[in-house]
Length: 242
Image (tube, rainbow, N blue to C red):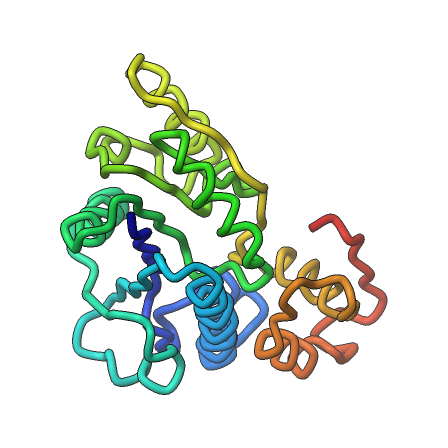
């Protein structure tokens, strides 16, 4: 039974990606940071696919017409397809359904803002899908960064407060209303949307020995970007909370 892993991502175009980081970074810096994220997370998923021969990798992108930007970033193992839908929930459901219709008995969907995610995190989610119908990876902001299914369920993506703190809780409540569905949670992970989160990631990246797979592209770019008094604000020191 194959596992289809779908990475959801915007194409890293200046001014169109990581816009919440533009409080401190330029549009070009945000795009270059996103490119680094993509290089690291796709390298990590490629490693997973080598560890498990039953894994198929996909990248669901937006907007259409700019796919050439991805060609130098994404390993050849990935199959590309355009995101379809009017909102995030519909796009996620359609992406999972694409993997399901492509013959994958289990499907995992995840975001691309996760440079610190490790192969073991994904392997745990795959293993949980052997027993449970739905697997969720909680993010620190109250949402989730990963969902695994045995078959996509449209009701999980209707009428949720996307981007709000209650998304994970609301999703679990929807699952619990279906008495025939079993779910489980895997490791919590932080996605990088805000400048504070980027600073915390930077502090983690200064310690290279504590990683299963060190995110080299993100580390290189963030050290160049933040390794100065101007970007760090002089005396800022962030605790290692992630």
